[in-house]
Image (cartoon, rainbow, N blue to C red; front, side):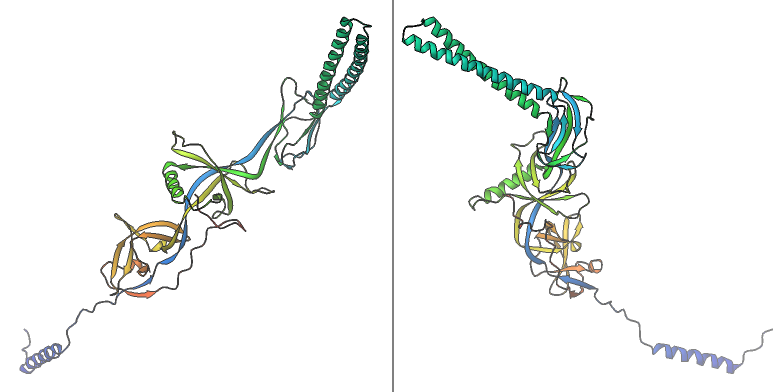
Length: 400
């Protein structure tokens, strides 16, 4: 059986409940407090003149490549170069046995001397008959015969002179010299082999590396664009040669500056492109070798007072590129933009923003269009790095 609850205990319990209710009702109610606006960093677009480029890929090619061949028959006596080395124009490369051709030269010299002696004799005979004919002491037939003999001797002297020149040329071919300055390849024939027997034996090749060519193609759309620019520049005076900048596969930027020296006659209908060629200085030891892949770009125009923003500030959605800007009330706005060229980490904005717009460049993840933010001004943006070019190169000029 339960013990009976005393009246005093019941009253104490009721009193405790009453006190708790009274004290609980005196506390303040909880209220929602909105978080502070997110912090973002803004900057106004950078204004400067930028150069617009067209970029290409191409390949390098030697400005001249010559096959060295044996032009006379004989045994190869000696080789006078180191394979793969640089040779100068006129350097001795090979010697082919000259004995036969030296003998032929001396024979031609002797034959010429004999023909000249014959000419002198016939000339004397003709002059004698000419005097006798005036004195009626000889017949006309004798005079004509002496004249014909004299003329035949003259022809023999001419032939002998030609034979002497041929013998002298063939003797010169026994020493093979470099026709240009360049890098020579390996020797394809060893000493002791017979060369020039029935054919002009290929001995080696020489490539001229300084200067060097780079070939690339321009598509039809860019070609028409350049032609429009060319027409717009008409009447502004003669333009200088068009510069072109090149970078190799392991190089940063475009450190080599050259000039466009050739444009093909027309567009290739099978590819819709036109062939162009740039020429670049490449002094020894050569940095650029034939057959290398090359990145090239050509300036085609300048944009004055272009507006640039950091590339990281540009967003992209299904409608295209956009920027987030902060208005005068610190509200984020979404602005669709049209972008232009990229230069040094900055992107040109062609349409969509004004020079005094506050563009969000940091804290983009916390910014939402229509929401309020707490903006802070960024430090002055660094100038975009100028295009790389060779030391001492002239200022970039747009292509006509």
